[in-house]
Figure 1: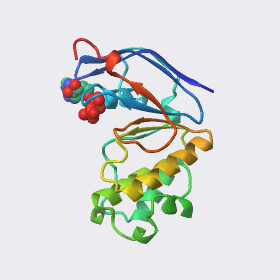
Figure 2: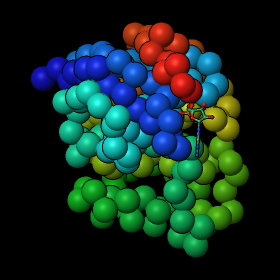
Figure 3: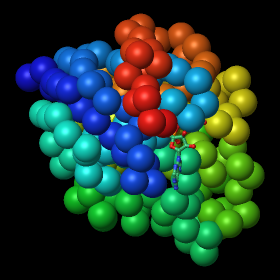
Figure 4: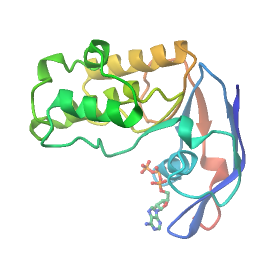
Length: 194
Ligand SMILES: Nc1ncnc2c1ncn2[C@@H]1O[C@H](COP(=O)(O)OP(=O)(O)OP(=O)(O)O)[C@@H](O)[C@H]1O
């Protein structure tokens, strides 16, 4: 199945931000959204993930197939790392396995309360959650913020494995993750009023 987005318009604060956005996304494909600050990358991802209504156009991406990771890690401060992961596994009807902890180097942190983690450790925990969703399309907004170089490498490997299994990823990122990805510059779609 190939997902298609056609002539999509997105809005923020009641103002059109992007109009006429179109692209397709196939299993195994990563598409990186580019464009300057404020162009509308977050707004587009939120719209496609079903978190806000579109201004017009169409998307064949079912929000029920989407795992969205935004700016907030959603870590529960009073739960330990493994409890946070189990909580998310319950939400998505999956189960926590050792490889999820290993993927984002969380094994040594398993019993630490979420609230005691550093920013990068919280981000690693938030990203590990993607593996528990069982969702096909990952939508990621600046996923590498706070990550050190080694963690960026772990994350890139996690995405590569997701793609190899037939998943897809739509990412807003300014850094080169070293994965094979297509680029979509949103600048031409900027609404005049934005
Ligand atoms: N609550 C709001 N009311 C009106 N406009 C807003 C509101 N929030 C954001 N905007 C505007 O919407 C536009 C799109 O913002 P968005 O966060 O989608 O951009 P972005 O491309 O993700 O930016 P960045 O690279 O800085 O994260 C920006 O011009 C922003 O100033």
